[in-house]
Image 1: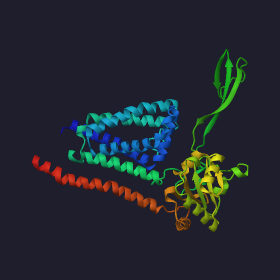
Image 2 (image 1 turned 135 degrees about the vertical axis):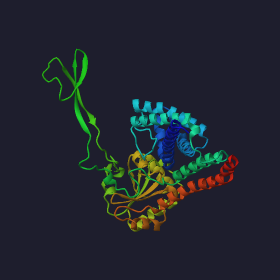
Image 3 (image 1 turned 45 degrees about the vertical axis):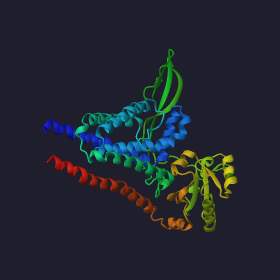
Length: 427
């Protein structure tokens, strides 16, 4: 191999690592939070006038994340090098013009390519895709120079295993809670702290804009150049605009209201209570699961015995609250909040949140409604406003092992039965 070929191979491997890692990361964060990506897909469908397809959002979320993750893993491992590089290029040929449209017209605030893990502006996403598109082209041209971790005999298993595993992983996260919570309401987060920014951090800078008209032509001026002494200009309007963006808090608003008490804002009651509070959160009661109603009602009775405040916070109208009461026999009080806020707090409808002094102690999917002793453990585990999440960490290790160990075993089998035999034949 001459010097030029070594350079080409090195660049091709770098491009392979870049595209593979980005695809793996992007697919992984979508699989971690399939509900969040489904919400983003619904935003896309609304923006493009395709609301009829919203029921397919979750299915699309799970499968798109799995496809993206599978492509990334296959590119990194050199599986079906030519076909996978073609598919990656096709994905980038679709996504790059789409993100250009998003950057130009801003129908959605961000593309959601990295979920809540890394939020990029639409222009930053477009520039990122330009780089990935260039790398994908280079990988396709030089795909036969890429290193293969497996022989052709094992390719089918790697593709099938990675895709099925990612679909199962995503489905597990949907039916419980995301193993890794990238949102500002994760376990251990203090909500009031997330609503503030450091005093020395840059804030939004606004400037006054004045609109004057002359000879039928309107023009904008600032305080520095408006025609104060020129009577030929006629004042039309004035407004302020954002001149430079500053640092924004991770949580900009947190408002909870009591509909039974003249819509009084009770946010402070939730955030600054020195005793633990149990919150049953259902962003839409008309769509909430009633599979665990008995467990929830028993938990409310437990809260009454222990004098732990228990509220149901929902974004639904009063008629849906009454329908829920009629169906479930709920006796707990109801509060109201924006459904977007509630979907951000917990990816479960309904879901249970334990909070104290504004710090999230624990969260449960409705499939994992805890026993009374687990509530006691969660309260007693409150240490220095950083509750432990050992259970979540344990599941992360289990999933990581469940994915890597089978691939390593298959690699060993492939090496012993196929690659070494091929090496001996070549000798």
